[in-house]
Image (tube, rainbow, N blue to C red; front, side, top):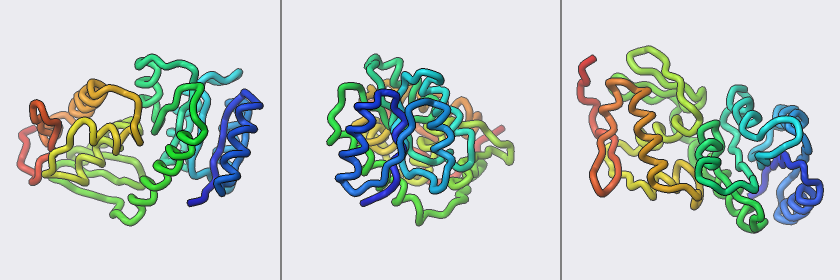
Length: 234
């Protein structure tokens, strides 16, 4: 599996090491050492397949860069792996909130990073054959446009919330454990707790309003999206 990886990292030695190892694995690599040059590189042709983004950059915070990437049509769906020396859970949660797909803490194994890059690329490829527009009762989502509606009113979702909703809807009627959601929505072996899943499901339900009732809680097990679009009173 090959592809173009954009590395936004201000530590030149680390960026060079990543470039060498990624090229050895067959990837094309584009480097940027500041946040602003990284944003420019992310929207240059060809668009990267995966972005490896450092959290602590000299001009812009990685969280701000990730937020801007998610606001642009060209990079809205591009997988982002955030790299940082910070390891507290709150930093990871903030990274996921602004749209990061995965998270690695420095010092990290280059081999592990490459495995995570490949996992994200496989996940993107699996969704390419799926229909873009899906309707379920009062809910409608457009996977390609990254948009969702309830009763024709559009709701604003973060990239992570949208992936969570898409995972539920594409597996409606099936039980989803918290560990399975962590693996499929957050990425391979994401280093967050199952409590994070509960927090995000709660926020997703709140944004869905009455349609949040489509998501059922199975105590001690996980969650299940209703198998049939039962009427939910407004």
